[in-house]
Image (tube, rainbow, N blue to C red; front, side, top):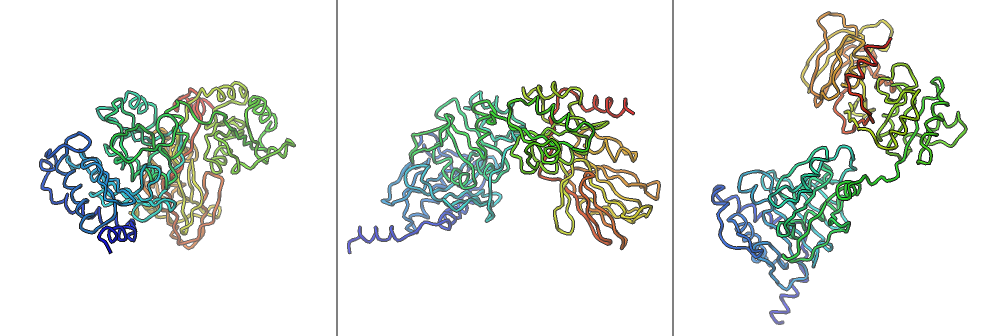
Length: 549
């Protein structure tokens, strides 16, 4: 048997797996950890195949990968920014950036990766992707058709909240002015200097997109930079587009470069690149408290004002009006118009993640935006999108290991018997903060501080304050006072006595709480989004609370 035939038989019999890439990364990490300091890491040792200087850390990392492949007879061609393309006669190619984020690695900033991917000829046919952060030890990986993982756990992109976007953006010295414009338009942005890691953050659902837009072609991205992160993002449910609305594909070479936007939700592309919300046809829900006075009249006014726009009416009021209805939690809408009082708004927010706007059909209507005497004007303003969206956090509730509901206003634990006091312990992040006898305990958000908590003498909080307020209800001792804690804290309320209590969430959902048990409250990952016109919080307080009966 000839030597050539033996070599080909060996190549075709060797299956490249994720373990192969992990072992290559082990070899790279072992060698770069031997480099003594930033000065040695930064030393320029040669010119790379891409025509730019190669630093010591890049060369050491690349050599370690090449040595492992050679010594272990791994049947792969190589494409790397330092050495270029190496044809080993294999069917597949290892596309690697042994150190993506070199400047960070040199400076000791823990945002860089070992980036490895396996495919045949282009970004579109990559079947394996592997990223490792040598500092944190985090590993992102994906195999085509089998999903994406971080440290062995499945990851998925998230559905974007268009009014609350978090975008990773390239802002280096070649950045296009549009990149800075995008940073001003979105809610939050970051630039980490490591494209593979920034795309991985999108893949795990912690960011909504990564924009790479350079005004210099030589600064745009090559396939070696994003080969691994692209398959990881795609397997996590996201996509990478060039800036002309095409799915990105780059051949295995160092000549082709591209700007791009990596996203988890296509609407982000439309908003950032096309400067418009992809929901060109808005879909509205109408949720009415059928028991309020003039409920049918107010609902009909909303319907008339919506005209030809797409809308759905909740089943309760629809039945009264004799028209088709859809339950709120089944509506596919981006905005819900709520007709009723604050309780109706809170009830709606327990059954939808859409933006809400209230039509005040009650008395005070602190959370409502449209007065019942100005429904047409308010809906017309809504339709022309002349508003802002105010985001408020929610509080999640867990009892006996079971998730109950989220609260926008407050969660209340109180006695289940009239005029019967209870003994409570309140823990903040598992540390005992208060022990008292009272009718109950309120855990209030800033939104709820103008409601039940305020009626018990607690102060109201500006909604921009990220805090919770713990308020005793009719406490036995005068020194049992309200106190404020960070919104990120976990609050545990223990019902010490062997007598029952009730857990009430936003005055809408009620659950029995056994004696000698605990209930936990913590920041929810969901948000409540209120559509607002011009009025600020303090104007609302003066109008609704100070100058009202």
